[in-house]
Length: 90
Image 1: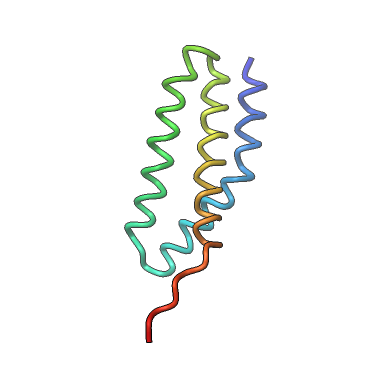
Image 2: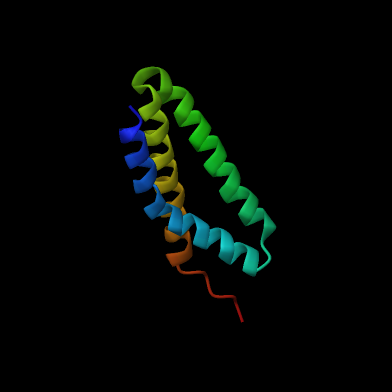
């Protein structure tokens, strides 16, 4: 009965690469608030979606919630890194 959940969690490993890279980069550049923000967003979104989807979908809802969480946080960190920064005035 956990086959679908396992497949969803395995699929969530793909966007998790972006999240892990963003955390590693924030630690490398000594940005503890960024690390905390990424972990906090992951926790809040993951727990919130799980609370909503578990009663509706059962245990597969937790897998969908985790996949959605990793995708959203991973996309946000990738887009944030790709966004051009404003040049400092001279």
